[in-house]
Amino acid sequence: VLVAVLLAVAAWQWGGAVLIHTKAWLAPQLIGRAWDATLASGQPQKPRAWADTWPEARLRVPDHGIDQYVLAGANGASLPFGPGHLDGSAMPGQPGTIVIAAHWDTYFGFLENLRGGALIVLETAAGEIRNFRVETRSTADARMSSIE
Image (cartoon, rainbow, N blue to C red; front, side, top):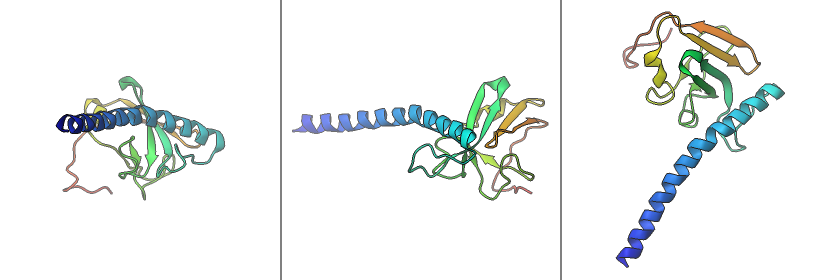
């Protein structure tokens, strides 16, 4: 009986690991297709019918090989799958402050290597390309800072 229980637990753990790796491979594929459909239709397209988020922009940093989709919302539905556009901030391509958030140890891990002059390319859902250059880099403690 103990062996059967141990085998069942091992199978459960192995199955969970396979599921996580499958999702990690499949999610970017589905998000990329949704982005292509968004550009073609001019309307936001979800990566899955039941998804809580959709791609709103594409973020590239050519010198670092970065090519990521920015998802709607900076919340638990989007941040596991990529950077998220903070609700209430300007939409990519619109006037105002655009806030894009991501986990610093995954999708935004490259930021620590950016230097002045680095090119950041943001493609909007309308297909417009916006180029930005890094001027300075600093780290702020969110508990002691605010965005104005």
